[in-house]
Length: 358
Ligand code: UD1
Ligand code: UDP
Image 1 (tube, rainbow, N blue to C red):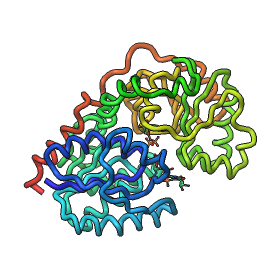
Image 2 (image 1 turned 45 degrees about the horizontal axis):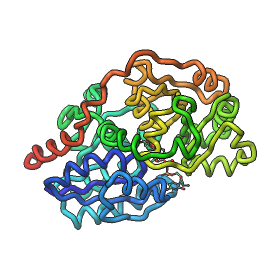
Image 3 (image 1 turned 60 degrees about the horizontal axis):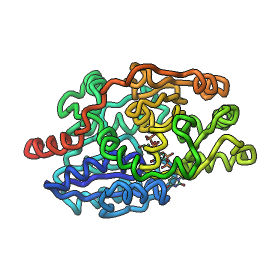
Image 4 (image 1 turned 120 degrees about the horizontal axis):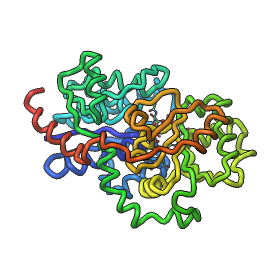
């Protein structure tokens, strides 16, 4: 079996790593990197740290307006798929690289499988929501991380090719959290004590592209009377610079650092007292590690984390963020709703089993 896997943005390297290992045990994988993310700490670091095979090709698309970016990726991916003539195209998550990969597979008339299918925020303002709805509606196999995702697809009339496999990010956490414990030195480097700091990441346009929201978030961080570790996404760093907020941050308690690698991130997530984020993947990783999570978004597609009481949503309002970070204290343990750590193996088995039927 020959599979073209398409990745391009940070979370996709992590989602793809367990699937890529499982695939390569018996099959041929061509890993195509669109080049959506390109900084060393947004891309290469994950390949080296996770032992993810180097991409067979990097299409070097880079940053730009969404329409241009998707168009460039589509044009280049179409050629890749036509030349490779694979049995499957495999796409991950909900980025512009996902949508471009899905459209390219359809145009090249190659069967398409979507890992992390069925997620919905019901907010069409989000580019990710448009990308995932369109990708799901043109996929032949839909690998869902949760039962809720399966149910949401059924409500949209999609039942054929839908499989509950679990979450490949959970596979990755199971495979790497012990490695992170042994190898990461970030706590020592930053002089952090376990359960004595808040970890924060912010990168959604809703929070970064509206100056008031970004300013409110920075104000809340400054007012916290505890240490805050803030690995800053390049989009956010650019906005902080453009809006001249750089002059007032970092304040003494807020440690703004470059994006970190996966092992350091897992070490920070496991040891944080609380995580304050707008990331999709980090809400789940907080849940896996039973680290309380405050999410600065109007809604989340990871509703299981809310229902279990380990995640809470807040508006980008300084006082609300501050109060939630100070007061949110879940009890008990998060339930196992993201699978058993073998999602990747199930994806590969389903690709094999459906090979002849497409
Ligand atoms: C993208 C995804 C988002 C995902 C996020 C993961 C889309 C629509 N959005 O958002 O779903 O949560 O990746 O991190 O696909 N930049 C750099 N260096 C890089 C990459 C980006 O400097 O290596 C800067 C550029 O100025 C770029 C900006 O970040 O314009 C935004 O990058 P882009 O890939 O368009 O979107 P993200 O915000 O990263
Ligand atoms: N991540 C990382 N270093 C960082 C920030 C995030 O390794 O500095 C990892 C994080 O552990 C998770 C993934 O990147 O696995 C989440 O990606 P991101 O927040 O960029 O995107 P989203 O999940 O919101 O799409």
